Amino acid sequence: MKNEMILPAEAPALPFRETALLLKIWVRNHIFANALGLAVLHPFLAHYFTGPHDKVLTGPQLVMHNVSLVTFIVLLVIGQNRALQIRFSIGTFKGLGYFLLLVPAAFWLGYYTLYIPFDIIFMYATIGMINAGLVGSLLPKPGRWVWQCILSFLLAGIVGAACGIAAYFAGLKDAGGFVKDYGMWSLISITAAITYGSLTRRALERQLSETSKS
Image 1 (cartoon, rainbow, N blue to C red):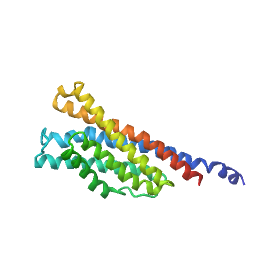
Image 2: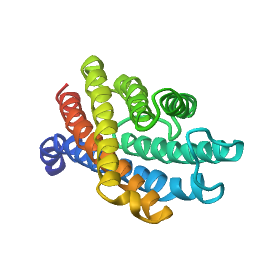
Image 3: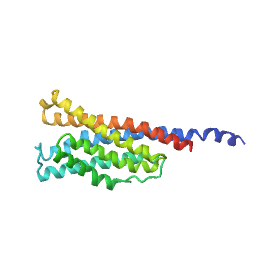
Image 4: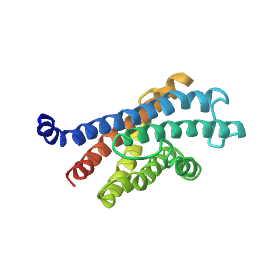
């Protein structure tokens, strides 16, 4: 009889705790994926072994850039799906194929058409488009999530690229090779991750609160 009185009072708190944990890990894992994948590993994988490059990359440079992009994508997909698993039944590698196909394609499309910084902007916008469908299918109002998600990632790409360019012309261009490289990618990726992480967190919070009420 005592347990019957406690359980109804505690039941509403469980979705709230799950939501809070999901949102915390969602933001944390995205910042981690960007920081490790792009701020730390990208300068090392893409530039250390094959050296600096002009607009046209050599074969080895192209290969190593794609290795770096794939590494970042895998970290990002695992991280965000682990967060979503707190509330939803979703595989750890759910959507990985779409990311591996479309994100590098968008990066190189931006790079070889409009050049820097559109490679970065196209990359983040494409991540947002994939997540619009992938995550939206789990939420009660996917239509609202679609535009919020795409806009959040697009804005993140613009903000990240702007911070990197501003730092470059503010003096980072005169720094040594790897100092410049690590500085640029740290500013771009972490700023972008914080931007879209905070925006999508708010959007997810509203959606998940509606799920808890239904």
